[in-house]
Image (cartoon, helix red, strand yellow):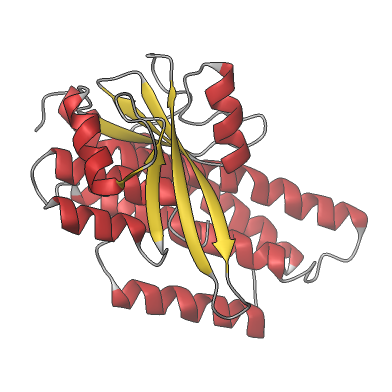
Length: 262
């Protein structure tokens, strides 16, 4: 969770494009990010892979009115609604985009090529049939914000007691990198998202960073098996809550449209 999921970029900027708030070229550029190229294969009416601009236009023509994010993990099909084949592929990728208005979903497959230090990343989004049903376990923005604040307080208390909250050169470097990214681009979501969604996503990403630092920093002061187990038990629900909050933030655009807010 240190970096923005590709499904988040696709959903956020795809929603802005579908709402007429950004141009197709700007949306495609934001979605690709630091990758080399993104293509979409399996689109109805297309015989082969197509570029993002054409793909988003095709989805609109197929009746897609919005895009939702799914960030599933083993035992937690967050944001998914089936069928099993799509869920399995989304779980393998750890993310997916589910269309609102058409029974379609997109799962990314990432390819890397080139020598070390000059790796080019290409992404193919596989378009598959999905079940039209409410996504699993996605909270409202208000619920996500309250849950995240509560989980963070509880985990911080446990981690502080075990001396594994994240310190030292590795933690400091990770936090510095996060702050640098935050200063470079304050637009964590695309135009059209409510301010609360931006706030929830920023908090969820910061919590995700701290969780990653705690895991990557070894066992810290948790030297006994029971202390290591306690740390894992403290981090697991916070990570789950942070993922739920991320999905709630990315999906806020569609949820507001469904309620007639926009």
